Image 1 (cartoon, rainbow, N blue to C red):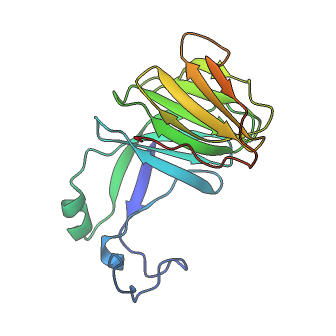
Image 2: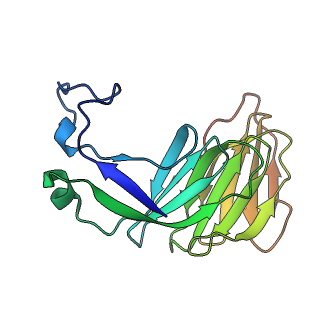
Length: 184
């Protein structure tokens, strides 16, 4: 499967022809089509030319993006991106998505309270975590095997890929957590 990209954004209602100050020109915008519903987030792989995007369908797509962005922005014709894998293990919309530092695993969270680590190349589920009692709203990798996740029931969990339950479960917050803080 391939994704079609287009630099012709003049007919798209969300990309007006007159960019605002400090924004990109519409001629440098590329639209990737291929998801079957709204796209909630995207993340560049830190070590490879891959782009992951998560949607409400509930799938995440990994596309090969080994093109030069400056070259693509100058092209008059559309170009093609290859779909590398589809991550379809979630049972609800995917609301968070991040690569680990090596770029070989993708961590994703859905509204059905599951957090899944998938192999970036094959798309297969490496590990599934279902300990949160509400959707995990955000997470961040501490290393290639350890990550933290937070949910709207005032908890922060620290996970290791080798276990299915959190290494630490922190419930000292008195307000909802919407994000994790990285690199303190």
